[in-house]
Length: 567
Image 1: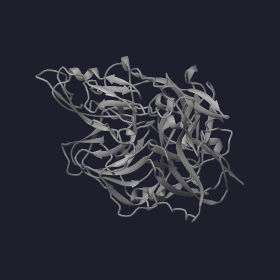
Image 2: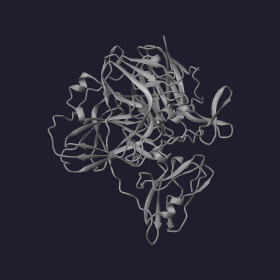
Image 3: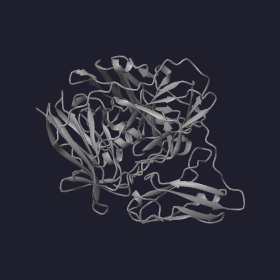
Image 4: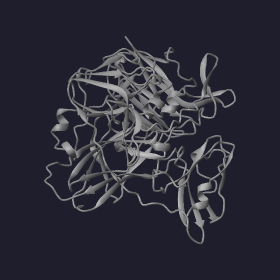
């Protein structure tokens, strides 16, 4: 049974025992939809059981009837902090979990490094699952992820996107997430769109306040209003690396030992066809001139998650490595799922940076929690591991928070071969970018919550209002430094992204941020009840920018606001 309010707690009966011929049913008395999903996998990589239980309903889980004797951990894909264990007791036979097989080689996206890049958005077949047909995706350049763009800091770059997608896709817009640029090149949700059959060129100076940007790990993705979740789910995502001179002098791992890893979840139907969770999109209604949503997938039951967690677009890949040091650029490109990255042998992940620059000092971490759109720059040392296999996996978050949890899944395998020459080093101090000096006074508070009712319509809101692209929610004078407060008064975790600046984290719940949040950021985790304070200097550009939740269904369903930088 699932009781009211359990979205931030657990199943009310987390330990269940059934006999071999018994039936397991789940009653959901919560206002949220939930799933009962097996962590153990079948031979095709799908969970042994995975059933969605709508709020106010009772659902039987028929797959349990055929399970072999044993214990099966389960969780909710929408709220992974909810976990339990099913014990099956039968005399013999039944379906047992399959051992995880990392059958596919990891694909490293192709690299584009010139000052003028042209990418054609088109539908293409992509190898995602190890067997069977290719999966049709919407892609940048025919691959998912799209090509990785690499550029030196301070060197102007233009990227032309051509919309050659199917007619049903409609117009597109592309946001370079984390970068600092003019609003016309920011991937506006309703303006400067790329109609089908047309092209648009975006200009990225890769500077901030007239100086080269720091070494960064950005990513580019569609940002179209009402369709951001759908367009990202279908494959419109790619990575963008910026390197500066200070980074290049550090003797960090380079070349094949510098590995960008985009992690995202998807579900599939027959013949490896990409599932369409947007077929039952909520209907829009208007109250008082504002947009709300009604229907079974209206807020708060609008989290898009997948059964398969993929790395660089492949399910359970492997990478052959030498017993040397590697640099991993971790990106969570999922719509709603969070991951706590950890290594199977317990060795630490040494975080040296965020997606926006290096940290002041390396931080050794047992696990790294990343929500949608968050990135981490980490070092892994495989010295002494010749002949072993180390699994990168997502584990339950262990910080004790009541916030929405993390997916539990194996991600990929590192197969460590022999020793090799390694001239990389682990610096004790890093050339972190200079942080802005913050004012004492908070200039603006942004509150993230759920507004409305299922009967009349609901929406994810900021300061009590759903997004309206024509409404300016706040104005900021160009050239000033401001301190903003981010508050989550809802029952679930949000991941808040702010455009326009290079942001510094000042306080998390009134305390100094942890060491891994003391660099530059653009996306913050806000667990229920949390308050985070951030600051930036608004420089270079005037015009409209966005603040929004990067759980993409939340963004599409109202949790976005517009602020304008003005002279």
